[in-house]
Image 1 (cartoon, rainbow, N blue to C red):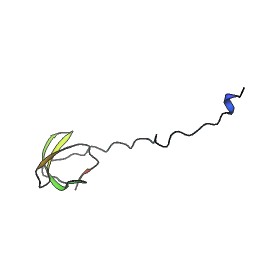
Image 2: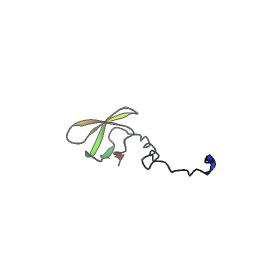
Image 3: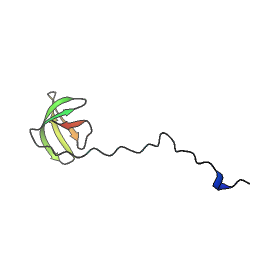
Image 4: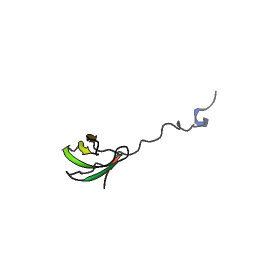
Length: 74
């Protein structure tokens, strides 16, 4: 019978990488210029609560959740 202390320890799965830290919550105010990775540049119309903002990207207003890694304040 093999001794369990002599067993080779295998590394974990390469797919079990630690999750990236969440994006920091940014404080937006009405009139702030923002950039979104998909929709481009826009202006904050309304801050509904700390969890979402309404942004006008020129094609109509859109609700964006906060924090969003795609939305940055300019």
